[in-house]
Image 1 (cartoon, rainbow, N blue to C red):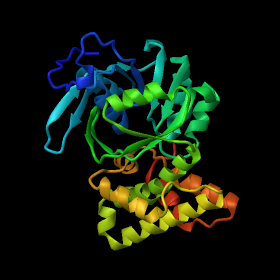
Image 2: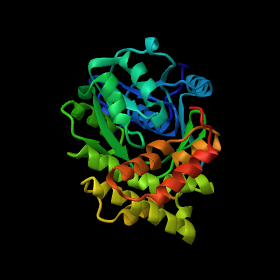
Image 3: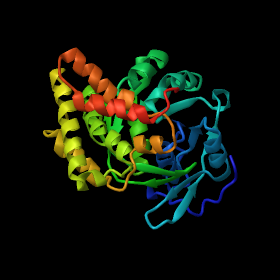
Length: 324
């Protein structure tokens, strides 16, 4: 980690007491847009952050400069983080945040197994279905919990991100979660706890299916979908279809109208380029299998037709490399 000036680091009033003990650190698995957003805000609150990065360009940028947060005016602030690229470099972590793409979850779980404390807790904020289960298979169910967020973040270059819409972090209840929740609140995140993880997961999945693939196919930020009648109609159809699959499984979504929910998120994150669009633009694989693909598979099990999600699934896969 390179030496960096802290002159740009805002200091929370709750942390100004010099007698206050240093808060526990957070290990962030990943170095993409969301990972950098969380790293910057945690580091700004004087919470030690270690980022586990694999891509060489991200490792280099983070080691040289830390995380750079760019506001709407173009002003930049840099935040120091510790960067590692293999498990043996990590200190034992009590709390870990998993932000990698869904297709990276399995290999990330094995990496995390080497550095997560036996009584530690890994929080997944990933898109799509199956991530919690893959992590729990390797780490044990007692060391994994699930969350979803509607926060937006756009990667400008390795280690440089721009926030693109505020939102809430909804967390599934877990007996070890309270100290982790406190750290996130110290960093200014709005937290709510929900008793049903499945409801949380499907609530976000429906919204992801309605927004992400369409923005990726059209090459536009989220808010543009609401300004284009045909794109908006497709968003609405995808949301209704995905919600029907949830209902067929007995899942009561955390909002009364999936279309209103998806359009609200698109409006609140209007300038955000979805993670799927960012993946397509850099020529990488996407999470479409864990989003629309998962909805199609669940639809087949429950007898709910999913032609819209199936088409979006196939079209996005047609844009990206098959080798992951």
